[in-house]
Image (cartoon, rainbow, N blue to C red; front, side):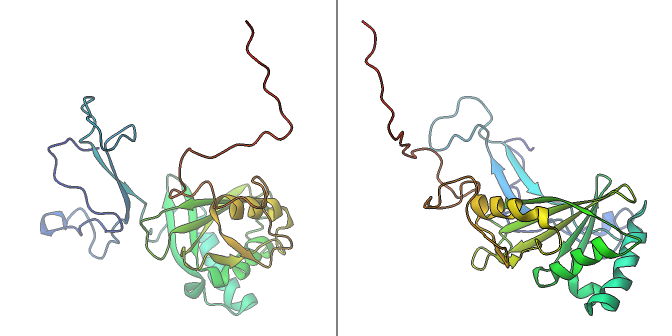
Length: 248
């Protein structure tokens, strides 16, 4: 966080400035800059009123970790090499066509995968003997309203019981076309998780056997966990309920 007198934070959707000449010894040339997905201003969510707390001038850019460069470390290079060989061999898909970026952050491995190759990618995660990610722990959604063209992110977590490893796969889709393939045909236990991601975020999982709401009523308008969903003011009906008169 910066103080009220600090320089303006970068606008949402921008990228941090590339390293200057003075930084060349610390930051290798060609390093990918970090996307700023949002800029949070103030605290407590107060807007348009007098702020006597002193926190109103705080500015905090929300940044995502950028793509990582080889070597990734641990077993991450081994798994990536296996995918690079298996995808074209078994799925007729080039690794670079399927994978947008690899992110290693806080000791965790994430593959950012293009939606059109998601099914091929997760099949290799499951079926390759050197990978054997037998369990998908589900899919969750994230909504970044300021990431134009990539507003909705589907995040999958996979566990290899054979090798005791964990990997994350992330797929981004635009608000205007929130479609991506269902992976229920590969991981049947993802059925209800995809329904919840549709219900809460509006991501459409093509090929799902019964993509209906799972938490909200079928006729509920909108998707409540999106950041542009209105807060409060939702009428609640209690059918058949009675409210007793207050005691005298």
